[in-house]
Length: 306
Image (tube, rainbow, N blue to C red; front, side, top):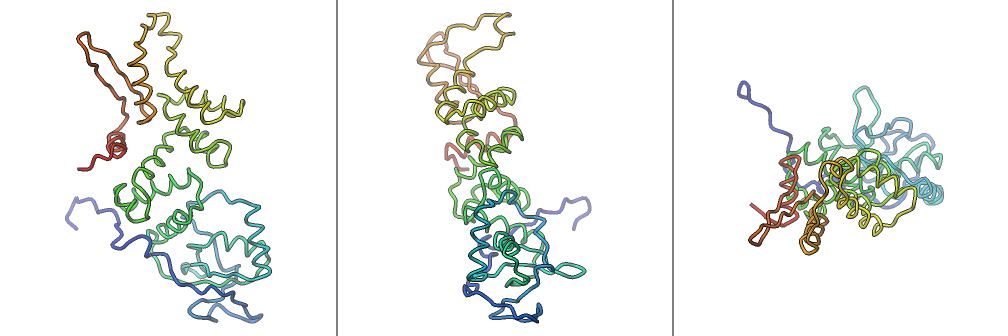
């Protein structure tokens, strides 16, 4: 490496989906009472649950307890139908890479051993596998998915278009998901646990600042507001001047036509929009952006490619 040169970010030289092991045996493995981790069937080992630790790079943080219990009941009756994926740890034992729901359910079911495929992987590949397994199976909530996309973009230096092709998602889906990460943490958390929906979050993004978003979010929780209610409230809040502005200078009457266009643009782009009619016709459009990433987001939303 040249002196003073910053090392490139790790990049994936193959499709992300190829990292996930395919064709794992779908029949339950019945571990022997005296089985060891070297016992295997079709490349799948029987490993003691006590030897496996959770994936420290796991993007998923919320697990449905009822669904886990149902899976545990099924495992008690039929066994683990698909092997989990693990990697060896320094000092012994294994780290879980993929299959955390199955692993947790097996623990609930009281299994001593689980079927597993052992693979040597880097941290980067382990992260990618954990993310893609969940994203492709739509097991993540909206915030976990957004954080997963952000990790992949940052860790591997991918563009949104690259990532969309790799995981089989539409690029606007990636862009819309990432926008949720602009919301204040309490709002993100409430989406993650299902107190409000992803669409509520998108409606809140039409407001210009976090104070307004928090205020409306609290109203959503208190009043049980629908997404449509939230959108209407966001538009009304955007139209209402602050008390300081009212004291300093009364807000001028806005042309209904231009106000309607401004509101539509705000809802479509998710940014603070300003339309100032010109005396001789036409208008000046302003969009408030906080970073160059916002510009990329708008270009992606408008499907403008370089």
